[in-house]
Length: 211
Length: 211
DNA sequence: TTAATTTACTTAACACCGTTAAGTTTGTTA
DNA sequence: TAACAAACTTAACGGTGTTAAGTAAATTAA
Image 1 (cartoon, rainbow over the protein chains, first blue to last red):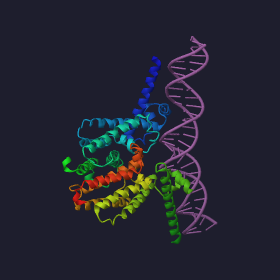
Image 2: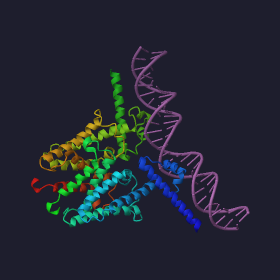
Image 3: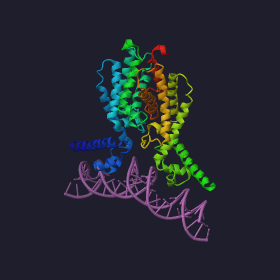
């Protein structure tokens, strides 16, 4: 079984190499601008070889999608120890925006790019699990906030989606370069400033007694 | 001068036809999926003819971009008569989301798609003017809100950008199909629900006396 | 040890894309 | 009627994702 296992290992290695090269390239030029031929050239294989390891370009997309969610969950895991749920919510917002700024192309892939996210959501999919872990962390934090008297009367799931939307809006306008409407002066660290504003808004909506 | 003017009129007509066909096609299949060749086929001209009327595909992009901003400003114009600035702000948010839902592909083009929005911002550009009119409406509304005691101590421009971000986030998650994380039950009219939540948050952040 | 077979990979091609250079048709002017 | 300019087309370049068919090497079986 040594030969078979060696072969399997080698196959796994090449698969990983393709994925890593794909990641490198799309970090440099974005996913849309990265072609199968580009990847093939860099790993010194013919383009068709890639199709022996991935069904199509979407398959590579999904693999990187999963990696992205694993990465963002790393950002979040560091915040699990924050005891106060409202503080944790604020920290999550900041971490999310940091993730987006530090991994723009990943963010693009995960939340902006148009792609068959279909055939997803099946239980078999690890990606869905990672995605739900991230969103679940947000939902649970918000549920704890509500238990503590914040956001009274609001639906946790819809509120979680709304908070996500708010920070996502900041990130996607930043990444897709729609920030030119604001003056040069305010444009520096605009995403961070907008995130701070969101946090301010969330803080102000609560009676002083809570804070 | 009758001949020359007729020719000029005809040229203008074909230009308009190209643009209208482009609009039709990208409304059906999205901008990225609409090719010069598709447009050419539908208007029964050779693909190269289009290049006599538009420099390149980006040029068509920009023309449609302008149309989109004219359209969203129509949505906004109906709200100019709303006297109370805070009510107007709420109405703007709702109108913005309605625009996005009713004109998904336009919205995509204007605020999501990656494209050389560069070489923009020059004063010569009508598009920039339409864009600034829309954002200006939001900024002015927020300034009025601040004068009335809302959002005390906040920077109007950054706040305007933040509010825009918040509703844009909702729209872009909806348009790019990232809403599957929420349960089936809440998924109906999710964009509207999230918009309502944003409005609730904005309302709650103010002392009762103001409302 | 040699023949058969499986595995891993490549070549060549298809149908598309945006774009351009060169050529053709058409209508207007001299 | 000849010259010219405008409007439009043909053919091509270099790129894309993807597939069918072919090759070379490694492994298995005789």
